[in-house]
Image 1 (tube, rainbow, N blue to C red):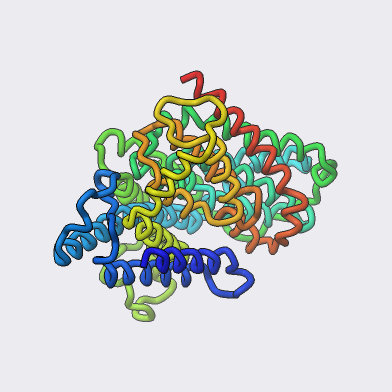
Image 2 (cartoon, one colour; image 1 turned 135 degrees about the vertical axis):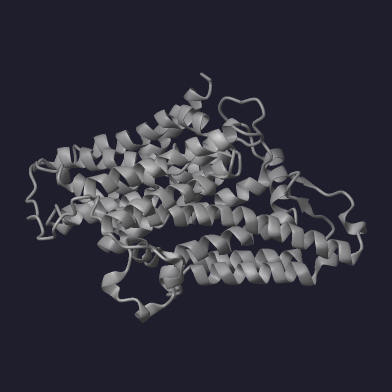
Length: 463
């Protein structure tokens, strides 16, 4: 039965990675393999010799001796546990994405666009790389990429030049997301899972992440596409809201406050994100002089489009397929974890892989394995890879292993355009060809990844 469940996961995984070839949205195989995996566990519960206790992060010794009813009860508790942990991430993302949509409703990002009043290609490259690095740490790398490419499309006329900027934005956004607990889904998973803390994440990963962004940008600045001057787009006729700047700083400030809320209250981050969303929504409603009533949700045509509140409109623009994909993939990985498969795989890695680099106290996996995880995140989605690592390894909070995983999974995806959410969204917005990116941008991303990884290995010896 275990073999069948593993095969279901493998085939589901292949369907996800071949999304563009088979023309099936990746959320569909993610949801299907999640449901089938747990159904097989329920049907074959008596055939499994072991069970992974998620609360204690260890295998149960006497699982095979338990009666059927107790096994079923244990499975239901485990399923509820994983659903709760997954829901924390999904609710957190929903809050962050809604705040960003509210900012966009007030045209808040036009404040950033207004700062671009020069034509130097090299200067524009550094501006967008730095903005991508900083914004991704605040509003997550996916959202930062969407925002900056949207601004880029309003500034740079020539698409053949614009896709070069988009490629460097992907690298910078993924690098910026790695050192912030709210900058990347995988880093958020490690943070919410109590594997890394905000302070140590910054301490260990800020310098490596900066190098991961600076090295490719510096090299690219000497390439032909970034020499000379640009022909800029004319300003559009859209009337800027008088609350644009206010909502930009209010929204970003609210998101940034979430880590501090967690430190002070010791509550899960999604609680702070809901508070942040509530505060931003209050000001959004005040500024539009409209009252938000939850009873109006779902009435459709009963409420005129012109009377929709900014909160209604922002909620309707949330990327729900991404949310459902995360639900499916995280719960599918949880199925493998519950059977102890990932735990056993971790033990195999520890026994067979050589230790490389400086050995750190408490580190249970080699640097080579973590680097391979980074390369793997370029080929397949980094979310399940990190989800698997959460089930595979039992190192304590702020062990350097978790910080290296955060860096590798967060930045390794830049090496292929399908390797990160930022890359996929840029690919869709600018119709970037997979092989064009592989030829022109991947080598820059690889150099940045290696530079940052080397910096991390030095940094961890200093603290």
